[in-house]
Length: 316
Image 1 (cartoon, rainbow, N blue to C red):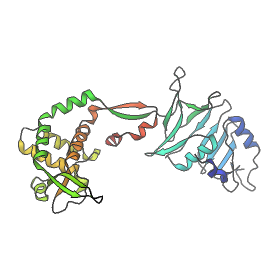
Image 2: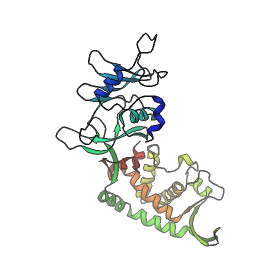
Image 3: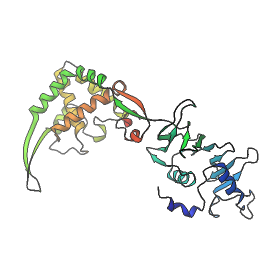
Image 4: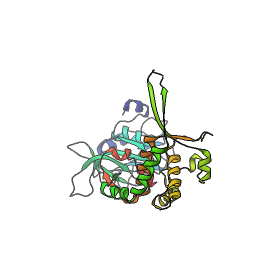
């Protein structure tokens, strides 16, 4: 984190109650301000201010006139509340004030710290989600000089249960054979000259617009078979076709898979062309999606691997 870019804010890092209390005592209130506002740093930024709570003796830093973002307690606890939404400004502020590594990803605020679920547990280092509109109590470990808390949310990721996944695949063995045979039957092999001068062999499967229309399969990109919750109805309909004993239903499921495996939004008059290997990849992914509640397990992750969860969007 490039702390130098925050020098215009005009305040030092305040890592404990004593530092915050000393800083607050040295600031002169803005002249003529009826509330006696003490700017935390640069004096023309009074929306970022510091005060002493006379009832609790806490040192409180308020942002934007309404959010008590940081509260230093005499017992050493530091209470942080990031407000109602994750935003880069707040995270940069915490980085300057508390030397915390906070960043935004997927509409969440992620902080690098030690998580300790209860006093009997060993603190685990990782990157965790900071809940919104919630007071989170942190303290700075005297030995490691790392932030420790029990108020963040552990990160989660999804992993494939291979045993359950294999059972799902076996239940579609008949359709899988049908799909492989159809791909072999309809694959066209062409040779093209690459710009490097090499000859490139392409293996593609083509399905025409008339073929799609005759099967009542929408050619619109947004209505294709896709991996979002909004596509659940289509996915379950295709799954029903796959387990049917009717060859016509198998054929229709095949066409749906070809349309879904195509990354093109516009369907040209010549039809859709998909590489043969892409069809198998899409089909395997589709089986996971259609049975995601059975084969994907939600597990706790103490690292940033949760931010690379390849299946997280399927549950949103």
